[in-house]
Image (cartoon, rainbow over all chains, first blue to last red; front, top):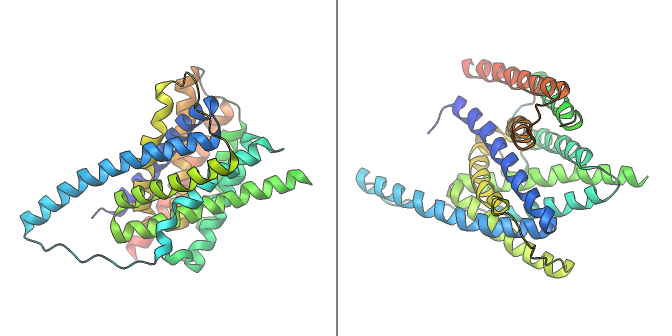
Length: 159
Length: 146
């Protein structure tokens, strides 16, 4: 549907959306608790996602009718792929544990970034959870180093 | 010793995030990014409801500013966009680009919210992250030519 460079821009845009999400959820957590804030955000997020499904669904089916296409048969997927929300929710609880422990917020964020990149590396190599395998090249290491070093400067460099 | 335990927990949490994104990405390629986002939020909501009962942390905060509720809106969009690009970019590439966007946006939102311009170290950090994105772009082009 889109070219490769669009995927890049969307990836970076997703990061910006994530930063905004964290910014507002932290604001809510200041007034409640991290877990309660995440619960509220999940509830409201579900409503927003439902609206998006309805909006885009209506547009898609209109386009399909215009193209004279038949509605495609539902794709079979393993049941566990529907459970992504569980590790997603665990993240908030686990982050609250480490921030309240002896690790600072900055340290927690930094280690979570390292964990994400190492996970990505392992996932690409083994194709974890049915994700497409991708060969790791030396340049990937250099890119990861730049992103991690830059992030560390941003996280620990004061505000 | 306990510090090391927390360092490991935070590291592990990164892998937990990765697992969530991998599952949502896989689901998105089957049923579309918006439906994947819906499933993620409904399942997470049910899970957190149980967690709140177990932890006993129901706390309806008093005088919460309305903007604090915007997180859910951005979360729904984030999961949809991220689930769409995840299978297309691969786990590592997706993680690196999302982190880059997240870090740069964090500097900008802090600047906007705090009013103080970012420190020299933070500006340097943004430059190094941008260098990383540029380097991964060159790899992308090389692969396209093959």
